[in-house]
Image 1: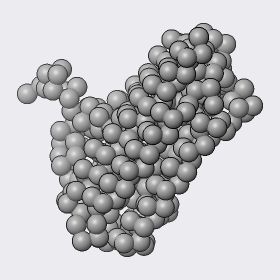
Image 2: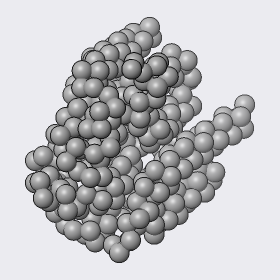
Image 3: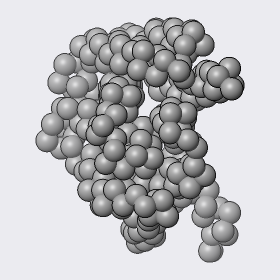
Length: 304
């Protein structure tokens, strides 16, 4: 029986974990708020950021599911995913990957309307990098950092679409935002990977938990999340006309949430990994965006 359109759409959204867009998109918009506060707002840039990030992430997730379909089928935790379970066919997912990849590259052409060709020039290398993560765990335990480096492109890209190569003249804010995402994502991906220690070891897949063990991985994750806060802390000094006390209070809340995340996951109890992974991190990314938006809006209003 042929699936109806709604059911098919739901399955593809499930395939790419659409709800997990909450991890990268808010940071891209946070970077956008800062660069627009300094250089002026653009609807084209906002539209382009949302469209391109959504399509790039969808393409990367589809590619990951294709590359890992045999691994997922053999792992009891992931055997119910769409390809191993037969909820979607391989040809359909390949077509989905081609469409979303093409859409991403085409989407970067939006910025040509503002005379910025850098996103289009960098589109294919960017796509290759974020898709390359899918192979990383086959040869390096540092795969978590590859994922972090892929997602750190989201806030950096917001500055590139606004300034083009001019971003090289104002590198510190996008660099620190990017590094904060790098450490944040790498840290929570280590926590998520603790669920597969034994399976990864049995089939030769590489990860920090498989290499360092459960306790070592959780310690490494804590260091990554401490680095996240350290990278976010200097932003009010780099953007004094945009960020101030509201942001610093919000940053304190982010630090507390990271502590909560680690309190939820203990070496003797991994039952709340998914709660720590999704719920807490979604609050962090969305919450930080609204904090920055509020602080920037308040400063700009006060200066009028």
